[in-house]
Length: 153
Image (tube, rainbow, N blue to C red; front, side, top):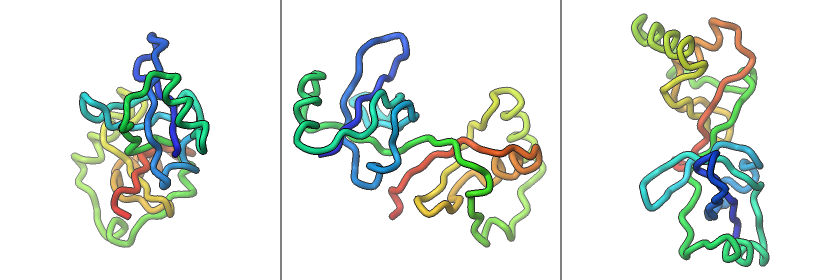
């Protein structure tokens, strides 16, 4: 069993235990922003531990008041070096509208990031968020916040 402890509220000491699917075992680290399947729907949280594996994981889950079966982690937000992102040919062939680019620029200026998900698969290929990627390139930013989700594999 693989687990991670997650806080959903920075002001609360309460940590919740989530099951970590094998596909995320080597991706999640302490202080990563993770997407969790909860009783209230999908919510973001911060991993307060790295992935805990093996026989002791069940004991740690019980000590933290976990109820079984555990809900699971369904995504991870990472900061990725722009040079590591691979762009599929289908994106390279498109020219996004000026309105989309303007919207991403406004989001970046207002929030310091993007409201659209930037998704990269486990091989570094961009799956979603091409306009955000282009804006980062326009501003010559060295990195971008990305959402890693392996659900399509």
